[in-house]
Amino acid sequence: MKVAVLGAGAIGSYVGVSLCRAGAEVHLIARGPHLEAVRRAGVRVHSPRGDFTARPNATDDPREIGPVDHVFLGLKANQYASAGPLVRPLLHERTSIIAAQNGIPWWYFHKLPGPYEDRRVEAVDPGGAVSATLPVDRAIGCVVYAATEICAPGEIRHLEGTRLSIGEPDGSISARCTEFSEAMIAGGLKCPVEPELRQDIWTKLMGNIAFNPISALTRATMLGICRHPGTRGLVMQMMRETLDVAERLGVRPAVSIERRLAGAERTGEHKTSMLQDLEKGKPLELDAILTAVVELADLTGAEVPTLRVVNALAGLLNDQLKGTA
Image (cartoon, rainbow, N blue to C red; front, side):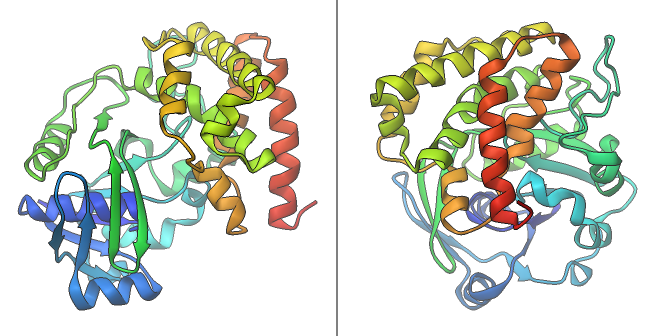
């Protein structure tokens, strides 16, 4: 099995070296000091489950790799539309694209029976730009439940969790999902193939939709948001509105708001990915995490006043970061 990891940051590198341990032919597409370190000495993973090192191939030019069986996307969702030049050299007629992203994916309504089948979500696929780059028939969804970070070039710290759920948009247990899942499991990860992956998407989104933008607006950690009565109440209201949208689309996450809050509180003084991006001056991954849900609320007739207010505030902050406000 030949795999290219496009966006070899913390999660991408962790997945890549795990697949490498399983015997897959793995190519990391990276740049800068991280690329140099991987070329020189491989990737070192520091983990509570035991440290290890693996030596995948590494390059900054996908043309050196050529077509692969699977492309694992470790990019932010807001980078997808511009990724065409990096993705195209990696594709043959059966190549799958496994997108490990937060929030609502661009393929959400693809092959989903019902009134919205194959509808495009404008917030995450503006004008069809993402679908043109990442064709929906190649897409395999992926929800990440692992926490990792780059602690130095070529070094990944695995904090917790090893589960990356994957699934086909049509809910089938396909050969390509099974092949990728088996390789991930052989590499030491949990990778169930979920017929109802959209349930996983909304379960994780319950937390991201509230904690990510609030943390960016307040600079607070997960624990700080949970312990402040005002923001704790805000999180709960945002979660309630999100669940209403999900239910109107036929999804009922099994995790309660209270359990989701308790899990967030256990993470302690953790900075969300959106706060980390803010501190680095990077654009926020807002469209997939929050704006798309507001769009889906408009589609389904859900009342989401709190989501709208937070989306407006975080949107202005994001425009300022991008220099468009």
